[in-house]
Length: 281
Picture (tube, one colour):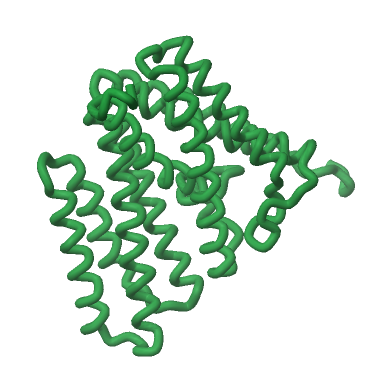
């Protein structure tokens, strides 16, 4: 090989990773509910580890293993019936501050470290829990709802990326994410609503078209908020990606930032649609 040989191109790493993962996720969603829930839980726990790493990168003395144990307990509690998750939330709110108060760490950094740890456990635990319950609570449509969520959020992201890359001129949030544009935002929203209509007409007619498109619009907007929020946290910690485990996509937190914001919204929307007042149906 000559010294002038070009390195292997990595232009399509993002797309190839998505194509490899998508069929596996579709199989999990459709035919193996517990496997899908386990996948969501494991991905969420890995995202929590990356979130706590942001605090470490910021220089705070994080008690990562204590927070991880509580995060695993919180996520696991969503597999139990009744009000178990809410009881674990109170446990998190009590244990983390108490542990930080007693641990021999720098007092000047105890408060922000405690705040980051508590928020990360609740943020990831509750939103991952909502994703799990979305699959389990609404059978036989639970798999369709998770599929709807993933397709709308991911294709919104893809539409925004490609429209913004080719046509974007107006910066949407230059301080937080300089590459995001208003044109990309609009392209993503349109893609999300087209995706919702396609899902309605192909295999999910039980999701009325006006509601499917309205939900897609809400999910797309919430996904943008989730993505920008994570960008703020990463910039605060002076890191580019939350991790490197997913080729072309960064870490699990990078991939789940939109899902974490949107799963509770779809859960509430479908619960209201199925059991809410007649005007909503």
